Image 1: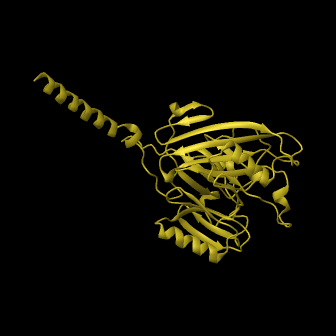
Image 2: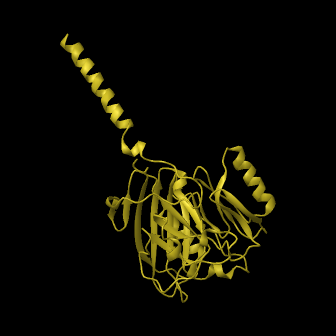
Image 3: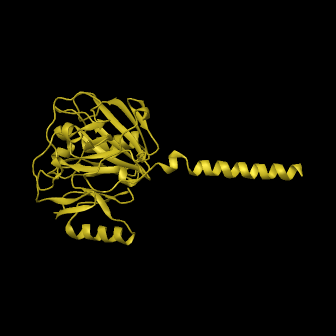
Length: 306
């Protein structure tokens, strides 16, 4: 009799623990965000900031790191910064345009654009509005432009949060890629038309070999976005200016060193457009900034209390 009672008590305890586990905040409090570009991140929990370089709540975890390096192409040692980002839902990776309007060609200062996003991490994107006659543009699931010329690599971020690419995309190769994604039940949410692709499956790509692409071989300030795993990403920023920084081959190689698990790394707009924000602020001083087309940013998706 006593052994039966013990078994019943143990079973009841296990059911209670299971119910508590299923209702725990880590599982119940993550709520996907609408794709609408006017919708931004949920308000961050101040207690989530473990330090100035680390934030964690039920839906997102970021860690910010820095290191110094002397690339061969650079006159001086440069500072390298990168942020690892793990999210719970694909809708936490978002984009915003300057002045929230594709038809407005004006560029916007990123320190103004980042306000109100409730971003944990943000960085500049490509040069979408610098020229309206080039590129393949999708933002937050809305298609805007198909003007490909076979000269640049396209990065696609789909509704599962996965990266894919088209090397030197033209209209035909892009349509083939989109058809392949559709066959897998995937749709593009955001696309970028800067490039090139820097890393594929952990291997640095040989870049800057074309005679006309001298800018790829020069030291410069750089920004790249990477996918490390399922819903796991990184942003890498390299200081530069006045013949300092990294060329693209050096950047690709460096990413494989600091992020050996990297699946895909993609070069974004650099130079004076390079901007990295942690909690809405630049983690380092910078000599001014110029207007840009838009931001890529990561947010919390913890459900608001009712």
